[in-house]
Image (tube, rainbow, N blue to C red):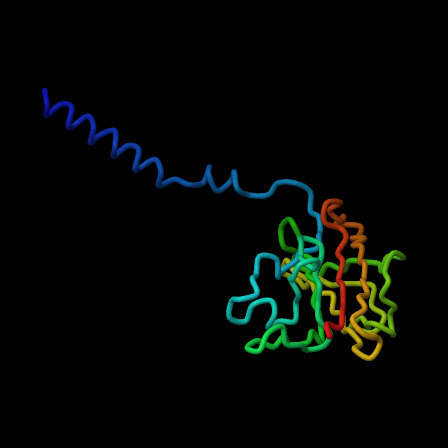
Length: 192
């Protein structure tokens, strides 16, 4: 009787193990099947200051009152020393990522964005967009990410004032902007 139970147990275990070797159903459940959309992505979210090459090293602030979220980032446009042992590098160029949610495409996807009227940063005084005056971002063919390049102008800031650049992603005819992640705020500051 013990041998029959042992063989039954081995048979059921083997059956379970073999059925887990066919993951197609599980993989299909993980695939995104919704409409193709585009959205902003904060690629520095989750980084910490004290890690080697962490936020401070990259010129991104995360001190009290300047925490970053999915849709915000605070950047230092001038280097400063928060302690005797650590120096923060200035952020001479900031990159805001735009990601494609859906299948990659064989051709480039061009998307429009706007600088919102709620921005306190003025183009040409506090920042420039690269290329100059750009209001379009391109996600290259066979890719899921495009980049908006922002160059802060250190000479446009006085003291420790903060200026915020508010961006809204407008999308295109074949890739609508995800309403949950269609805005991004970059706050630029001199920190000394």
